[in-house]
Length: 376
Image (cartoon, rainbow, N blue to C red; front, side, top):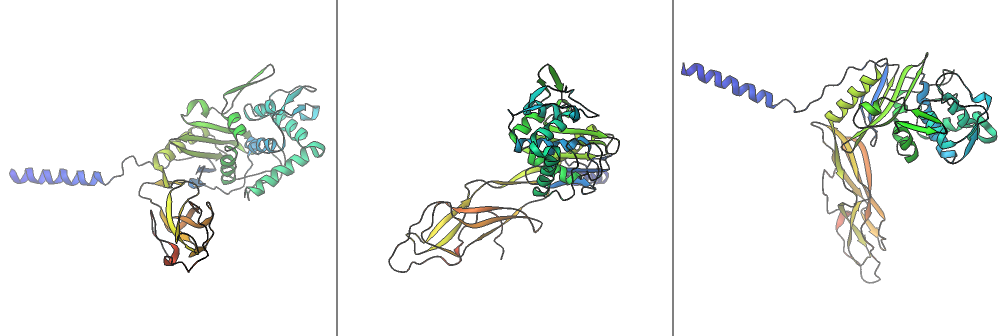
């Protein structure tokens, strides 16, 4: 009987040891029904999950993210626009009336909340000046190229199906991350309702009122594109972007993607702004070396078991005078040997030159490393 008890106890202890090796809070990747999708960390650009992320597809009214961004860059919110008959297009609408005049801000709310195709046409035509809509669409394509959206082309400002009008999930995620750093854009897309004259407009993005942490997005639908959705959510200082293309289950898929992302990843602060990282030698100066600090903070999303390494590279020696804020090196951050980011290292103080005997200085120019590996 004693032997049986000991055997049973050993089995329990073995089971507990096995259970202790299971990661706490480990999240399983969701089963997403979209033809193409991306879940991306907005600040670093790291793709956390994806499928067919560079597949070029019709994108419907998610086009209006670029329309709003270009309008904000070329027009003032207080600029006025007068509605013309040719602006009154099919599909979703903010119900503009021919001859009425609205501010660009009111039109942008009508563009992004009820997804007004009429608002898109009015914005593009009026903002484009003498070149009208054609000029405005040219700006949209120029902006896409500047942002590295290599799988994107625009043919109109509304997103109605058209030849030569397409994008991909990865390009849309990068665009949304960029646009959310524009304060006026972020304010508009985070609004649940807005008024324009006698109109009260509701946001088609239902995730704003359903998912805790959703701070903006854009819906879309056409016969060619199916349901498209781009959203942004934030929790605990981490901002994620979700994009789904041709997805009949988009609300549930975005919720599942965010729950996965926020549970499976954490933001690791690799270096803080102003953190002292290295010493650099100084030739002919009143001091033989100068401390270098991080010009900015750097954080990166990491899954359980992942960690960053840091390589510090700075000049062998700087010639005096050295000014405060001079860039003399870089902190390079690596994940599994691949660079994921870098931060400039700047001098923390001024070092004036001296005109006397030769100064001794520490060889190699590097005498402090606060974290990670030096490398070669």
